[in-house]
Image 1 (cartoon, rainbow, N blue to C red):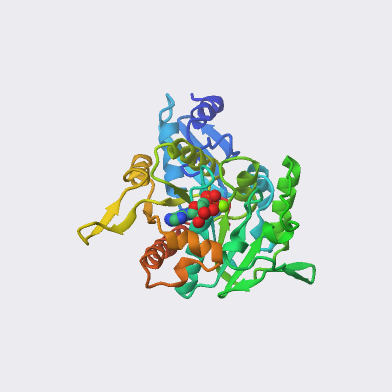
Image 2 (image 1 turned 90 degrees about the horizontal axis):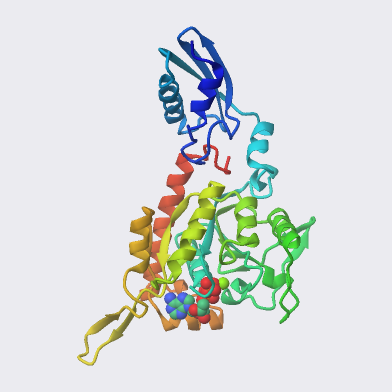
Length: 365
Ligand SMILES: Nc1ncnc2c1ncn2[C@@H]1O[C@H](COP(=O)(O)OP(=O)(O)O)[C@@H](O)[C@H]1O
Ligand SMILES: [Mg+2]
């Protein structure tokens, strides 16, 4: 007769398809009963109506059937209590604490390294989403080099406080919150590990965003303490990864993707910035020059089997508009404006898709 121990042993190999961790490690196996050649396993899902439940039940059944002597397997599904879930996933996410309850989609814009145009993409994406009639906020979580407020033409502004909340300044209908507002002018804040965590967690709680369709978060580059904290503290709908076509960037991008996978945050896709330069050649015809190499981001997306969200051209208007605090995407008829409108379209599509999929053990409940 098969033993309970044998059954648990094979169940160690069964993983939650989204979290990619063993059901046993996730404390999802509640009960194993063996009666002769019949086995009954009770599995506690992290969340009711988990879209993966059929697959999990089937994986469990197949695994247990492999144990010698087992003829019949019954799988019963239950749901974890909020306390149990908290034990598995750590601290409650902010949405459960209500601070962000009226924000429908929170999207992180990340990059493996700095200087690839993450902020430029985040700001212009926020503007393009807003142009499509969405209610949008943007949070500059790049504590090391906050500049979203400058790109949004809000340098020197300050949020004001109301009912112990910070009310973000608005520009072009977009609510803006940045560490740049809080830092003394011209002085970089030197952050140490635990402070980073505290500051970002507090920011998640204290900003009064009101009702938003989209909150775009400009993450600090890389996979250090700060981006990790943001991804843990905010219930992200998904992450967008910005890269340039240079080969150099790929290892860093991989690390970012890995970080999000570990945290159970879905990747919306890769955006390739500074992908090409459009000019007029000596013959008067339009010329497209791949300044930093060709299709790096697209190839990377293909290799990693994640969506490719598009290419942003190298456009002097983009850097200039950053300097004067007027994002290029405000002009939807310009070449670059059109590119960002298309990106916004794809982000909306992905957000709705991910919303339908639900969290299933991912952070967003
Ligand atoms: N597509 C682009 N075309 C022209 N300049 C760009 C483009 N993307 C970014 N830049 C410029 O490159 C610099 C770095 O961009 P930024 O968005 O601040 O990068 P990051 O946030 O990744 O550090 C800025 O001066 C910005 O204006
Ligand atoms: Mg930046």
